[in-house]
Every structure is written in C-alpha cells, then in structure tokens.
Amino acid sequence: MELLVESDGIIYDMTECCTKLSLSEPLNDGAGSLDFTYLYDGAEIIQNGSYVRLCNTSETDGIFFGRVFKTGMSQDKEVKVKAYDQLRYCKAKDTITIENETLTDLVKRMCNFFQLQTGSLMPTGYVLQAKPQCDKTWLDIIYGAIGDTLIGTEHMYCLRDEYGAVCLRDIADLQLPLIIGDNSLCYEYDWEKSIDDEFYNQVKLVSGNKKTGHADVYITKDSGSIEKYGMLQYYEKLENDSDPAKAKAKADALLKLYNHEKETLIFKCIGDLAVRAGNSIYGSIEDIQLNRRLIVQKVTHDLLPVHTMTLEVMAG
Image (cartoon, rainbow, N blue to C red; front, side, top):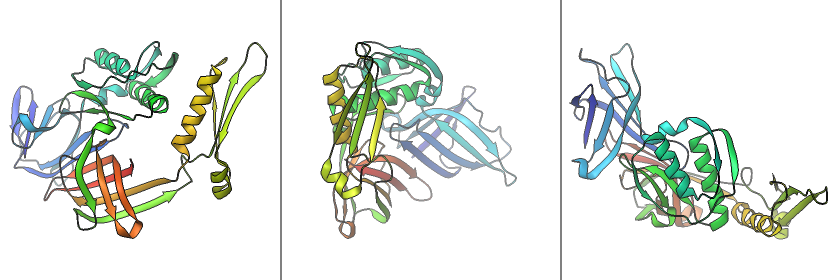
C-alpha cells in the first residue's frame, strides 16, 4: 500500500507514518472519501487542496485519487485529514434544463462544466423527460436521472470516480465472483426487513388535463400485497397533459420497483479492495435464509492495522 500527498509541488510519502487509514464510498449518494491520521512531527501540516493518491503498489493499480478538503489537529498532535474524489465538486447547486438528453449526456455535461476527467460512460439510450431543474445540486440532478432511467429501462446505473476518472456503469456489469457470509470472510452481520420505508403496493399518478379541466388519475395496485400488508400508497403529480400510455407504464414500473419488503444487511468482514459501491457480491447466511446476489450500497475499508471492511448491501 502506498499513500502519497502532493502539496505545493512537493510529494510526501505518508505510507509509513499513518496511524489510521480508511476509504469510504456510497452508491449514488455523494463522493468517495479517504480519511487518514498521522502524528505531527513539527513539519508543515498538509494543506487543503493538496492531491492525495492511494495505490496498492504503483499508479497502475490505483485505488483513490482526490484532493484534501479538511485538515486539523488535536492536542495530542494527531493530524486528521479528509480527502474527496472529483464528485465532491458536483455538490454545487445550479439551475439547468434537461432537453432531449440521456443520463449519459447529462453526466458528460456535468463533467464538462466542472472540467472533470472522465472514464467509461455507459450509453443508456433512454431519453429523459424534458424539464427544468431549479436550485438543485448537480449530483441530485444526476441521481434523479438515474432513478428515472431505472423506471424507464429497469437498468440501474452507478456514478462513481475510478481513480480520478468519473465513470457511469451499468450495475449488471459490476458483479464480483465473491461470496460473503457463513465461513466466507464475514465475522459479523446485522439484518432487517421492513415495509416502513420505500414500500408501496398501490401507485397513484395524477396529471392535469387542460382540455377537460379535470385531473387524469392513473392507479395500479397489487391486491394480494394490500391484503397481506395493508394499503401503502405512492403518490406523484405528473406534468399537465402527460401522455396516458407513458403515465400508465410509469405507474406499473413504480409498483414493480417498490412492491417488495426493503431488506437491509450490514456485513463486517475481512477486506477486499475489489469491493466498491455499485459492485455486487453473493451473500450466503443460512440463519436468515440468504442465498443470492446483493448490491453494495456503501463500503468502508479500514486499512490499518489490518484490512477489514463494512458493507451495507441491498437485494440485487
């Protein structure tokens, strides 16, 4: 493992002096971050804006590339540093209009605006609904487009920084040949099933109709699920004069997306740097009858003193 920091043109090798080192990345929920601490020895403290690079052995197997956004020191002379990848800059708010664009087009526009380096940007092919986006962060606009694309195509996409290159990936392409669970890497887990959040068995969409002066209502439901759990309704107001066929298709897609128990599972296990947010692994725990593929929603790699990782996963 090699940790290098470039500050004012000088490169510092922090590999041997770190006391703590952790890497964290969420799925479609902000930038990845690298946190490390070291003991102050009288030299200049690392400055905000410095470049940070974490590699296995060299740049050819880079793990994290970003810039320092926070630095500070406590009375015990332990310096704490926090760096983010490029996506941190996309927290800036703006007002834009989406028009005849796909999710891929929107990501390209964002990267051009912030002058970010790009890597693989998967073409989605799905044209987003034209609409203004007012006073939102660029990331929230992109994540909204990811959600709309999921509803329209049933394909989920992942926006992430891969060692200094913003990438858009189809999650179906991010499967890892890794089993986590009984007798395989995992030493602790916490599991929960819920219908309290993001569970809906009836969908109601409403669109104003200028011709009739009344609202058009589109409802789809699962009667069996309603009988089992009670009626839990999703409601959304659409643009006026929405296309009836598209509105009905959206209602059906939303019901399919939300009409199942939300399952959350946290693994604590031996670390593997191949695991990133958006990747999927195979989960196997007999006690909770788990035997299927899971998507990593958030991963935190604690690299010192030994490499462990905490995974928050969802059903794939």
